[in-house]
Image (cartoon, rainbow over all chains, first blue to last red; front, side, top):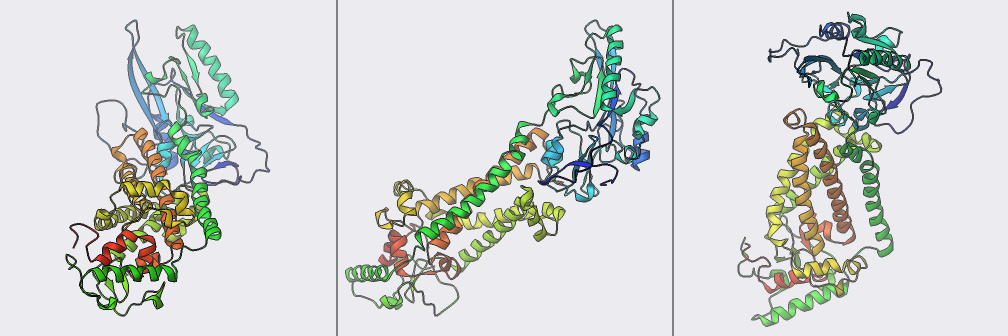
Length: 320
Length: 234
């Protein structure tokens, strides 16, 4: 919902700026997910369901811990479990809480054709406003992380809101509140980057030389960040994108193709109008009718006798 | 005859075989062809308006004609498929007259004379000119492109069977094909307005002999010679 307490800075399919005289008092926020501290308990999934009144159906066991096996319209966050054998033969269980990354440059918002169905607040949260959603699924095509899901029930797109309703009143997201190990922390983006730096330093001292903060710049940074032990290989974490960015196809489609395409269509119609003003109608004249009549008389002269033009018998091979 | 220059008199309605001179006018389109054409035309307008509404924010308001954003999204693909089916029917009716010939390419190369209304310099035109034939083939290509790409991201029925990169490409291809088709149709509509008598040909089915003489002389000769302009046509 468009909350009074959260100023909107970007709105899908909207060319005029949203109300913007208020200077955002709240700085940009971020959720930091420390994969090295996550034990995969799924308390965050439960808290998400509870706070957001979501009850996913009972699924089927697909042989792994992931439950449900993928994000759905009812499951806005999912723990993804990956077994990884490092070069020295040690098995690592890499657990990643998947969900919306709240990109600073959101591909979903860029792709969305419905005015106001996707907004970005001044604090960085990207939120879907389902009452404006038309269910086209362009957000799915636009997202570099494969996050939004369209409900089979109401044909609207859903995803993590970063508990914008809680954040708006100064609370932390429900998942943060539920995390028992401190793997999830929430605060200003600046503080989270600082906290991540300490965590990375600690991990490096424990032998994870490549530990790093995941705040991909291809989407101008995200408001959900990870601390990864293997910062150089994010793909190890159930296929986390190494260098996510809005697909060039989407950029072309929703970038230049849109205005240029529409302008050229208008230009084509205008060209026709101007051509008409310049040339006038392409009409036939008496001379054309006379020439036609003359031509007909000649052809009929060649065939036996001239028949009255009004009652010309049908020629051969023309019976319908 | 000459008293009727530019005018088409009709005394009778009902079915008339085409390419025939009746009551001083030439039958260009049968009732079946006209009805099929206008079904395609109306479906095209609806598909284009609903599609454009989802293409650019500036024309999102077109969605009011369809009952709002969600209804626009729901109806657009069905309208599109309906248009496809009707177009197939129309294409079957007119395809035999739309084979490109060397004269047609020459006609197209002389587009300056076409736009400059110097028709006397152009090669004699049969039932359709090079531009009409070109638009016919552009329509076929675009509609095939629209159908295939559209199915790929048709929600909720088919999109789930395709990967996201495929859907992205399909959406781009859909937009490009729609753009080309809309430009082609704008040209088609303008040609119909510019060349007087064309709209009447598609509404009443009749053109005057002078019209056929001026714009489609080879067809005129075939009609008035009493030989069928289309080999093998009935």
